[in-house]
Amino acid sequence: MPGRKTRRILVTGSCGQIGSELVGELRNRYGNESVVASDIKPEWDGESEGPFERADVLDDGRLREVIRDHGIDTIVHMAAILSAKGEREPQAAWKVNVGGLMNALEAAREMGLSQVLCPSSIAVFGKGTPRENTPQETVLKPSTMYGVTKVTGELLCDYYAEKFGVDARGLRYPGIVSAETLPGGGTTDYAVEIFYDAVEKGRYTCFLREDARLPMMYMPDCINATIQLMEAEPSGLKHHGDYNVAAMSFTPAELAEEIHRSIPDFEIDYDPDYRQKIAESWPSSIDDSAAREEWGWKPAYDLERMTEDMLERLRKRHEAGALYK
Ligand code: SER
Image (cartoon, rainbow, N blue to C red; front, top):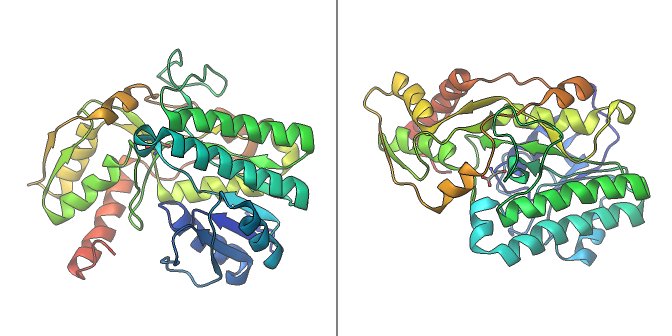
């Protein structure tokens, strides 16, 4: 996959679960100075070296200042409030997720940027959506504010692409499992927490039911999917902001069983809370054939390979006394 070496990329929400690793990979491909990390947090705590700017995505003026100062042509807009936190603070979720994206799209339109990539989510699905092998084109009636903001985001990307010619793209992430930065405020976060607790305590109490099957993806695949879509030739794309992508689906019980194979004493129990209802409103598996056909998407990790890799990484950190960095 040849990178366009001339890009100047701004990543918002860089200190988050996905942003922190995406920035590193983008810097490998485009050069450290060409990728500006930004976040509402005061400092960059990621591994890679390169520019960092503190910026609130709701501060339009500041966003444009960063774009101007660094000659940015591509925005990867990762800043968002996730599903579970969004149910506690629905007004803030709307403001940050929709207001932040509008600022990014408007900056792109007015300043003539080449591309905006904004992730969507399986949370766009809900009542009336087929839960198995959920199609690309289907009913989008989410029951969470997070889902409402993500449907809106998809529509905004489509609108800006068609009305103003902004190259706005997006993909519907499933739950993302990763070893570097903990997720925060999501319904699929259990699938990360479980690994930390397995390594640290040998036991985990899950906030979803044992049979809550959800689509999931390991971080290296998530990073690849994101960069592949960014770099895909526009002529091959029939969609803009809403590509289904999938890698695997599992239940908490199945994930626990897989962990059990390498930690035989591992124990799990279940204490479902309000997040169970959110999980029940989402698909259990996803049809991602449009992404496969239009830009060559193909995941590399299944449950077994992901579990092996997660445990290896976290065990090493645990032994070094740095499980939670
Ligand atoms: N992982 C997200 C969440 O749980 C869904 O996109 O909120």
